[in-house]
Amino acid sequence: MKKLLLISPMLHQGGFERVCVATARLLEQYYKVTILIFSDKDINYDITGLDVVNIDVPVTKKFGRLGKALNVFKRVSKVRRFKKKNDIDIAYSFGTSANLVNVLSKGGNKTKVVTGIRCSTDMETPKFVSMFCKKSDSVLSCSREILRELEKDYDCKESRYIYNPLETKSIRQSALLKDDLLSVKDQFGNGALTDVGNEKDSKEKPFTIVTVGRQDYIKGYWHLIKAFSIVHESFPDSRLVIVGTGDFSSFRKLSEDLGIAEKVFFTGVLKNPFPVVEDSDLYVLSSNHEGFPNALLEGMALSKPCVAADCKTGPREILLNDKEYKALSEKIPDGSSTSEIIEGEFGILVPDMDCNEDLDSKNITDDDRMLAKGILMMMSDKEKMELYGKKASVRAFVYDPSRYALDLKKILDDILEK
Image (tube, rainbow, N blue to C red):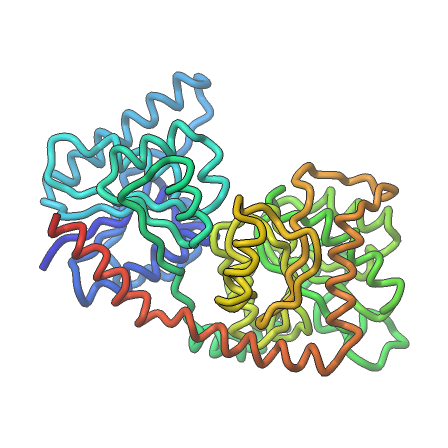
């Protein structure tokens, strides 16, 4: 049995970390799989039964650039020795820092190198992308948009794409664990999420908009909160729930300045976010950068109608059917965002939004208004929401894990044969 090494910096909350663990489980029937990490801090995924090796070279802030360079050297040295000692046949890395180590540890062993470009932010350092294209045996991306950019801008001959696997069945099972929902509270004193209406005189559960993701500028949460303030004017009983790790105090302040603080819930990181998503009515993705947004697909697996920004990359490939995607690609061949709202077969796509964080409550931009318009198009039409909920459920099954496993096995076997 061939030996497959999966390299990830950590296994804390994040999209490519989830895919790394899922890949290990799905491919262990075909390969002897080992996951190699640089640090075991805050592991957030179930790794029971998996072969996980921690080389214990975490991120360091000591000595500035010199410290970072020494850190990379330590990682490369340890990974190179591990590959050689364990006779690894192929190593597949997730994320820029893991890709760098995978490529630089290539010498002195027989291991084939596969680097994973998971997000448009991975493309923001051209010298690294160019290195990965030249030094890897193959570059593997998770979207057609990234593949197109690799071929066009880097003349990357050995590039392929494969969509992330989606565990629809397990997501739906996890969503049924209602006790996990009952324990969820707002970080800033709004009480339990299950407090009906969050108001004493409210008799019905408010219309709930949800999003899941860490606190990061790429998630565009200031746009979402400002858009929600517009939505709230038309639907005063609605609320917004943001699930994810990080310091959200600045966004809480923005909510206060907009006068909607009691309507915006910040749950923090949740081991099981799916009951919260299941309890919602609409999923919204406001990101200005993505790879292939797992959280959006997880919302669709729970039959939630979706509104998403047409950011690079992923949302358009998920919410548009092949005909719609082809038409948009031909209309805007450079991959830029749509300038108008598109009602795709599987969800509503709004134009990409500015990536410069703006916490000024008085500055409501056209981007914010356009996102609010897309949300209101859903909320104001119950039949449309119901249809998109059904379509979302159908779309989710396209990313079946067994199909992913077979497709990835074929890709890796092809690389090994060269």
